[in-house]
Length: 66
Image 1 (tube, rainbow, N blue to C red):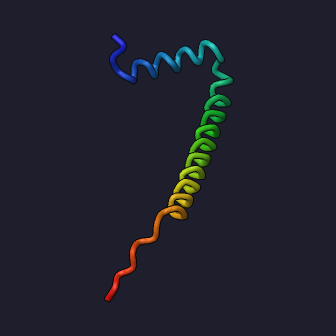
Image 2 (cartoon, rainbow, N blue to C red; image 1 turned 90 degrees about the vertical axis):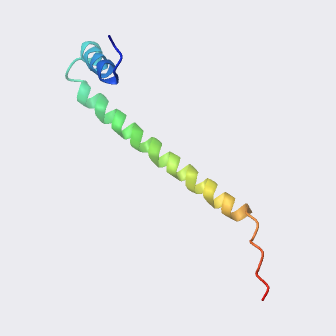
Image 3 (cartoon, rainbow, N blue to C red; image 1 turned 45 degrees about the vertical axis):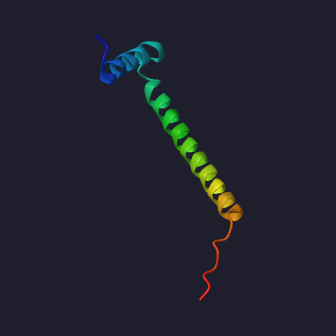
């Protein structure tokens, strides 16, 4: 009966409306969106730091001798 992700999404929306009321849904969506944005910013910052650290610690390629 609940094989599709669409079915679960509909159930989650209905449950959210029942628990939080229709006036709180936009506030919750806004908060969730901001949280996801902050998570992505943090992830990108960590990835940049890791790349910089790897580039700093990587051995230099051997120079070609003519």
